[in-house]
Image: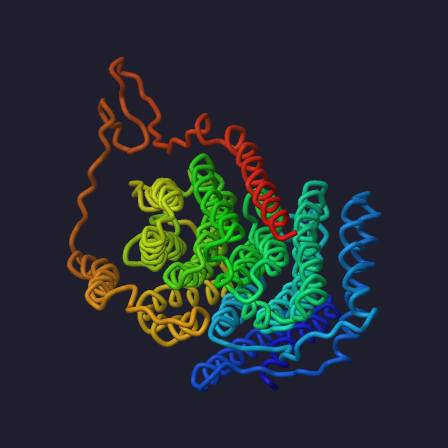
Length: 639
């Protein structure tokens, strides 16, 4: 209980200290480092004790005083949102906030609503895995931000330096996420859910430019819409099902299937908005205007992971009904559509943003299928994606600080110019799509689950979506490792705190690939056996596991062996042949008219086929139509 209290409360305490430390920066940075170290130590100890205990842990069955305090805090959050909404004339945002907060306040003050007694806090293997993502990946992003924000304001003097506020909100975000994943009480979960929505709004609007303000309000209203669905679901569960906790809600799903459908579809809507699924994807794309640590945090360890976490919690209720069909259709369609949209992007952060939405779509589809095998794949996708995407966002930010560009075309030959950052980025990209890294293993398991459940449309989404994924990652990887002769190595401007974060996450990525069988056996399998009350044979056979580990070993050893064998040997430089004589600098060639022509190779982005102007708006309309039609059928059938 003490550890859970620490994980939830300490980040808020650290945020308060950071908000007060405007200057000196060295003292503020010290607080960030110490707080991050304490959170990592606490989450590792918490995970160790949780995994070695015989059963999940639950705490606090009677919390009237805390509930009242949360209600007051929620009203203050509403007032803050309303003030911002009126200041920028976004009145619809104020309406959404008042509606859901008013509803929850009425439920709390009206009284007389009996619900089954249940623990407010609950920790099982899924909560532990989420805490590891939040506590390690999230705090490493905070460590990275120490060096990054200093350079950010050196390069962007037009923005007011509000670093103390920035770091404070980062830690509030971590505390809210710990509270969300460790809460069993639906009202508590909703409270922390709303804090994450407000934090994302404040971080996206950090620079206070017109674009940043508009994008932050788009994120806020979309997530408030999901929050309203969450609030209505809680009220419905309290009044009609006499249940106010997640475990209780999932457990009564089979016994009261028709009554469960309405709150289930509303909770699913909340999960889809938070995980930026179509038609709600634009809020996450707009988050790129914020400093890179914001993008990394939203895309990997916090905001979007809250959405898929909720869907995975609800996954046993999705199997064989229209709500599950809605979730799988939206997830599968989002996976395919955003994979195609990523092909047309040359901005590194935008490729990562579309890739995030795409992979979240696949996780969502796995949760929506609602069977043991698919959820196994979804959880592994979530773990690998969290580390890979954080690593990629942070490395792109480091490259941009050094070269002044995050365009993929400007990363040509990065393996020569910035070998350290190129290696880190290659590990991140490999983690997203190459064998034997985990995303590919998880996609294979998802494909098998979709086939076993006769979900053929999901098979189509997965096959074609994976093909497009292969396309854009290969283009990027090819740019990084394309060797440019006569290229000079650039001075790397990446600071110590940034390298600590990048190296730690690189090691974590490789370590997770090496230990994924153990993670499956000791963490995921027991969790799924309790969720679905069954057990399945190993999804990845022992033979396949050995082959994958051998492949990973080869990937690590082969470059070292090549380097060892070539020590002391003069490299032979082979100049490019471009249908004419190379002038000798590998930058120009002589054409058939004896004229010197510049030589440059670029990727083809096929904007006329897969560009945003072609696909984004139709994808949003299709996603909205799927949700509206299937929600209509679900609610109509339940009533």
